[in-house]
Length: 189
Image 1 (cartoon, helix red, strand yellow):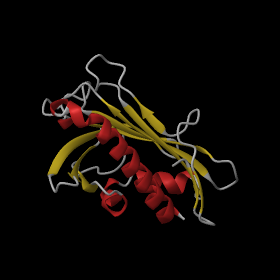
Image 2: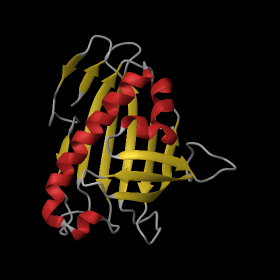
Image 3: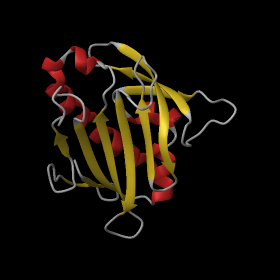
Image 4: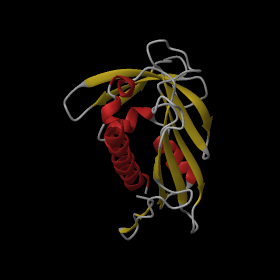
């Protein structure tokens, strides 16, 4: 789903449009590293307001069908800044729950919020995945175009242990990311 105007409920889908939503197959020979899912949404909220919603990791459980919670680990200086750490809890359709350590890789107010999900090695240079929100002015005053991206990294993840279900997982991520952005958009107005 690309564009949702929450002021009047109109929904326009442009899956696969240039620069829009879609799934990009992994360019790496392992079939996993570099696989990408992108979802775009135009929201009826300014970039400052929407950035406040996406960068408050403690609220993700309100919006996501999979990531049911998160909390900052840096109690002395919690919040969205480069290098800050948080722990997220993901619950999958089969009931399996996993906690993942994350580190913020980019935090520029009203422009970008990104983080790496670390694998067991804890190496931010080789994460399991990288998640990113990019904000740009929308097509009308007071709107923001949000691009939400998942990219599988070189780190160890469940996808590496179950490559036969990876394509299905990418489709599931696309659906969950679309639903998350739609819920965030409703909360931001």
